Length: 187
Image (cartoon, rainbow, N blue to C red):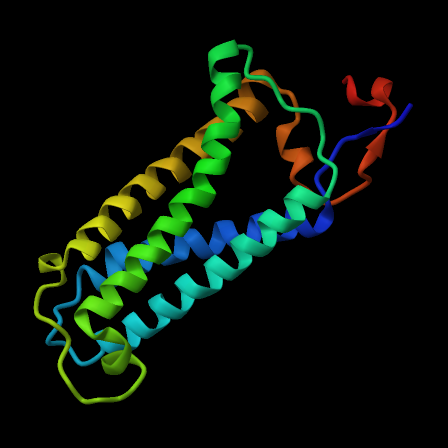
Protein backbone atom coordinates (compact mmCIF):
# COMPACT_ATOMS: atom_id res chain seq x y z
CA UNK A 1 0.00 0.00 0.00
CA UNK A 2 1.28 3.44 -0.88
CA UNK A 3 1.86 6.11 1.76
CA UNK A 4 2.07 9.88 1.58
CA UNK A 5 5.78 10.74 1.65
CA UNK A 6 5.70 14.47 0.89
CA UNK A 7 3.48 17.41 1.67
CA UNK A 8 1.16 18.76 -1.02
CA UNK A 9 3.12 20.85 -3.59
CA UNK A 10 1.07 23.96 -2.78
CA UNK A 11 1.92 23.52 0.90
CA UNK A 12 5.60 23.09 0.02
CA UNK A 13 5.59 26.26 -2.09
CA UNK A 14 3.80 28.23 0.63
CA UNK A 15 6.23 26.91 3.27
CA UNK A 16 9.31 28.15 1.42
CA UNK A 17 7.75 31.44 0.28
CA UNK A 18 6.60 32.17 3.83
CA UNK A 19 9.99 31.18 5.26
CA UNK A 20 11.68 33.72 3.00
CA UNK A 21 9.06 36.41 3.68
CA UNK A 22 9.12 35.94 7.46
CA UNK A 23 12.92 36.07 7.60
CA UNK A 24 12.92 39.14 5.35
CA UNK A 25 10.22 40.82 7.44
CA UNK A 26 12.01 40.12 10.73
CA UNK A 27 15.29 41.37 9.23
CA UNK A 28 13.61 44.52 7.94
CA UNK A 29 12.12 45.17 11.37
CA UNK A 30 15.26 44.47 13.39
CA UNK A 31 17.88 45.92 11.05
CA UNK A 32 15.95 48.40 8.90
CA UNK A 33 13.26 49.98 11.03
CA UNK A 34 14.92 49.69 14.44
CA UNK A 35 18.16 51.14 13.07
CA UNK A 36 16.49 54.08 11.31
CA UNK A 37 15.51 57.15 13.34
CA UNK A 38 11.89 58.26 13.01
CA UNK A 39 13.10 61.65 11.79
CA UNK A 40 14.70 60.02 8.72
CA UNK A 41 12.36 60.65 5.72
CA UNK A 42 13.08 57.22 4.20
CA UNK A 43 11.71 55.41 7.24
CA UNK A 44 8.13 55.88 6.03
CA UNK A 45 8.96 53.90 2.87
CA UNK A 46 10.58 51.13 4.89
CA UNK A 47 7.57 51.07 7.21
CA UNK A 48 5.20 50.91 4.22
CA UNK A 49 7.01 47.83 2.89
CA UNK A 50 7.06 46.30 6.37
CA UNK A 51 3.34 46.84 6.92
CA UNK A 52 2.37 45.50 3.49
CA UNK A 53 4.69 42.51 4.06
CA UNK A 54 2.93 41.74 7.34
CA UNK A 55 -0.48 41.75 5.67
CA UNK A 56 0.83 39.52 2.85
CA UNK A 57 2.29 37.06 5.37
CA UNK A 58 -1.01 36.94 7.26
CA UNK A 59 -2.97 36.24 4.07
CA UNK A 60 -0.53 33.51 2.98
CA UNK A 61 -0.51 31.94 6.46
CA UNK A 62 -4.32 31.76 6.50
CA UNK A 63 -4.26 30.20 3.04
CA UNK A 64 -1.49 27.79 4.10
CA UNK A 65 -3.48 26.75 7.18
CA UNK A 66 -6.52 25.98 5.03
CA UNK A 67 -4.41 23.97 2.57
CA UNK A 68 -2.76 22.12 5.47
CA UNK A 69 -6.11 21.16 6.97
CA UNK A 70 -7.51 19.96 3.63
CA UNK A 71 -4.58 17.91 2.29
CA UNK A 72 -3.11 14.63 3.43
CA UNK A 73 0.23 14.69 5.18
CA UNK A 74 3.09 12.25 5.61
CA UNK A 75 3.28 10.42 8.94
CA UNK A 76 4.78 12.44 11.78
CA UNK A 77 8.57 12.45 11.88
CA UNK A 78 10.07 11.30 15.14
CA UNK A 79 12.94 12.92 16.99
CA UNK A 80 13.77 9.82 19.00
CA UNK A 81 12.64 11.61 22.16
CA UNK A 82 8.95 11.16 23.12
CA UNK A 83 8.71 14.50 24.96
CA UNK A 84 10.04 16.40 21.93
CA UNK A 85 7.71 14.46 19.64
CA UNK A 86 4.74 15.65 21.71
CA UNK A 87 5.96 19.26 21.48
CA UNK A 88 6.27 19.26 17.66
CA UNK A 89 2.59 19.95 16.86
CA UNK A 90 2.47 22.63 19.56
CA UNK A 91 5.46 24.44 18.08
CA UNK A 92 4.20 24.12 14.50
CA UNK A 93 0.81 25.58 15.42
CA UNK A 94 2.73 28.09 17.53
CA UNK A 95 4.07 29.58 14.29
CA UNK A 96 0.51 30.34 13.20
CA UNK A 97 -0.31 31.89 16.58
CA UNK A 98 2.86 33.98 16.62
CA UNK A 99 2.28 35.31 13.12
CA UNK A 100 -1.29 36.19 14.11
CA UNK A 101 -0.01 37.96 17.24
CA UNK A 102 2.65 39.79 15.21
CA UNK A 103 0.12 41.09 12.71
CA UNK A 104 -2.42 41.89 15.42
CA UNK A 105 0.08 43.85 17.49
CA UNK A 106 1.31 45.56 14.32
CA UNK A 107 -2.24 46.62 13.43
CA UNK A 108 -2.84 47.79 17.01
CA UNK A 109 0.38 49.82 16.89
CA UNK A 110 -0.63 51.36 13.57
CA UNK A 111 -4.00 52.39 15.00
CA UNK A 112 -2.61 53.69 18.30
CA UNK A 113 0.18 55.69 16.63
CA UNK A 114 -1.86 56.86 13.63
CA UNK A 115 0.53 55.14 11.22
CA UNK A 116 -2.08 54.34 8.58
CA UNK A 117 -2.61 57.97 7.66
CA UNK A 118 1.10 58.80 7.93
CA UNK A 119 2.37 55.82 5.93
CA UNK A 120 -0.42 55.25 3.41
CA UNK A 121 -2.44 58.46 3.48
CA UNK A 122 0.41 60.87 2.79
CA UNK A 123 -0.74 63.14 5.61
CA UNK A 124 2.70 64.69 5.87
CA UNK A 125 2.64 64.21 9.64
CA UNK A 126 5.89 62.98 11.15
CA UNK A 127 6.29 59.49 12.56
CA UNK A 128 6.06 59.28 16.35
CA UNK A 129 9.57 59.74 17.77
CA UNK A 130 9.38 56.60 19.95
CA UNK A 131 7.04 53.69 19.16
CA UNK A 132 8.16 51.94 22.36
CA UNK A 133 5.79 54.27 24.25
CA UNK A 134 2.88 52.34 22.69
CA UNK A 135 2.08 49.07 24.53
CA UNK A 136 1.04 47.26 21.32
CA UNK A 137 4.48 48.01 19.87
CA UNK A 138 6.18 46.58 22.96
CA UNK A 139 4.13 43.41 22.36
CA UNK A 140 5.07 43.52 18.65
CA UNK A 141 8.77 43.55 19.53
CA UNK A 142 8.28 40.75 22.08
CA UNK A 143 6.48 38.58 19.52
CA UNK A 144 9.15 39.38 16.92
CA UNK A 145 11.91 38.13 19.23
CA UNK A 146 9.85 35.04 20.04
CA UNK A 147 9.15 34.38 16.35
CA UNK A 148 12.86 34.78 15.51
CA UNK A 149 13.64 32.23 18.22
CA UNK A 150 11.05 29.84 16.79
CA UNK A 151 12.59 30.22 13.32
CA UNK A 152 16.08 29.44 14.65
CA UNK A 153 14.81 26.39 16.58
CA UNK A 154 12.86 25.21 13.52
CA UNK A 155 15.96 25.41 11.32
CA UNK A 156 18.11 23.66 13.95
CA UNK A 157 15.51 20.90 14.31
CA UNK A 158 15.38 20.42 10.54
CA UNK A 159 19.18 20.20 10.38
CA UNK A 160 19.16 17.72 13.29
CA UNK A 161 16.75 15.49 11.38
CA UNK A 162 18.57 15.81 8.09
CA UNK A 163 22.20 15.57 9.20
CA UNK A 164 22.19 13.80 12.60
CA UNK A 165 19.24 11.41 12.35
CA UNK A 166 19.67 11.20 8.56
CA UNK A 167 15.96 10.56 8.15
CA UNK A 168 15.55 12.61 4.96
CA UNK A 169 13.25 15.18 6.56
CA UNK A 170 13.96 17.81 3.88
CA UNK A 171 12.50 15.46 1.28
CA UNK A 172 9.08 15.79 2.96
CA UNK A 173 9.02 19.54 2.33
CA UNK A 174 10.25 19.39 -1.26
CA UNK A 175 8.69 18.80 -4.65
CA UNK A 176 8.44 15.34 -6.15
CA UNK A 177 6.29 12.22 -6.04
CA UNK A 178 4.02 12.29 -3.00
CA UNK A 179 3.19 8.59 -2.88
CA UNK A 180 5.78 5.95 -2.10
CA UNK A 181 5.77 2.28 -1.31
CA UNK A 182 6.68 1.85 2.39
CA UNK A 183 9.70 -0.27 1.39
CA UNK A 184 10.98 2.62 -0.75
CA UNK A 185 11.02 4.98 2.25
CA UNK A 186 13.72 2.96 3.99
CA UNK A 187 17.20 3.81 2.78
